[in-house]
Image (cartoon, rainbow, N blue to C red; front, side):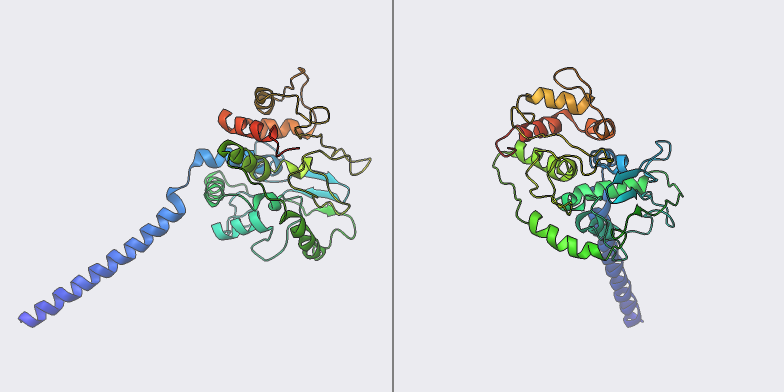
Length: 297
């Protein structure tokens, strides 16, 4: 009888140990994937990174896609990025979401067109990606299916993107930024990753590949019928914004008003209203310090 009771006690002890171990594994997984999530920070990042601006055609249906981007290659139509399982990204896990942002590859292994700025997002911190992912998971689902891109031949063949990505990697792999100034580092991170300013303000080759990620000297129109010209935002005092002070840049990114009292026009209106205005004053000060630094010539 004593032996039976002892065996039962051992089994009970082993069961409790296994249960505690299982709960510990679950707790570690939960902490790793959820505790760091800040909904408020996720919302700020989703706006600052352009997720809202590019994936919202109707502000009553945020992140449901349908926003049209007209280029010399044709018209790109942004997809639904709410967590609808059929028409959005509801089946994506965090790893797949991260791969899409950093490498421009869909969960099905299909490359994205570079109108999606994955080459800038590749430097995003994992905790920032986690916040964006979980924020998108927390907002209302929109069951809206968007149309496919309307692209000209031969740009409608995605297979060409693999070749282009190899060429693009060569350019991007040699554009590193080094500084010991922590505020400038923060500004660089916002400018060159979260805000991907160079996606519009950096000169491009005939293949639309950015020549230098650190060069923010602007670019001319790519086509006479396409209004995609972007101004010089380097620290050059005559051609860029070098004559602006830090407060000028902060105020501009908050309100859209330039130092001369003029108001911003074109696509930048939405970028400020739905993007940079969500950043804190300290973050915008870091941006201004970086833009006016010697690293932004």
